[in-house]
Image (tube, rainbow, N blue to C red):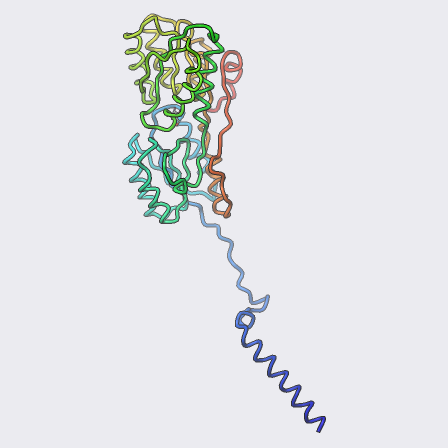
Length: 336
Ligand code: AHR
């Protein structure tokens, strides 16, 4: 009897075990180690759609080259490039086309600050991250873009003003004319703001004229001609939001019969090679660097995003201020 009861007990336990395995389908369906499907490593390219503003300055050309070259040299990246010819409407069209093409990442150098909510919302709804390259947008909802890669434009304006105060001394009366960048661009607003942060604290420093030269040499020359016509020898200093406008203005000053760099002290921003050469000639006094070589940072950000990393909201560029011998010594190593 004991034997029979023992056999019944063992059979019941075996059946119980079989029912338990059946109740856990995951383990039951799990293939043996040898049978496991090995996932192919995904070597699909990361497709970046880049909407560039245009080619208004040497700086802009250097930025385009940096992005194109870095992407071309990286087998993991495919770049779709669009030149907006200075028009926001063209940038919006380009962004919509990138969304339709289901790119992995959109890089946007926004010509102006405002008016981006709708299209950035469309990118967000499509699950496509947007990286702002070099210029900022003003949006209430900061989740509409992933990161901003670029410079501290307010600091650039402050450094420009500090240079003038160092050059003239805080007690000298200085009449300044200002060539602003593109109207409505974050970079123009911030460079103006930074400059005013410093000069408005000193009653001796006055901005007597301020107008946009649209970041181009031709417009910089034209507006400087108008400044000279209106104010002539009263002008002691020129602050230009970029080197190209300063280089155009230098021509206007020479044609007017004044000596740039002496009669009118000139500070501008960017650090393009032509600016360094002009410092060597004694015509431009100072250039505040703004780094356009953003290609490597963009590609790194694209890869980090693919790897699921969280990017900092602002990936800041490191920059310097150049004048005098330091500028001359730097000429051979300037890459743009
Ligand atoms: O946004 C950066 C600015 O745009 C550069 O300083 C200027 O040269 C360019 O066109």
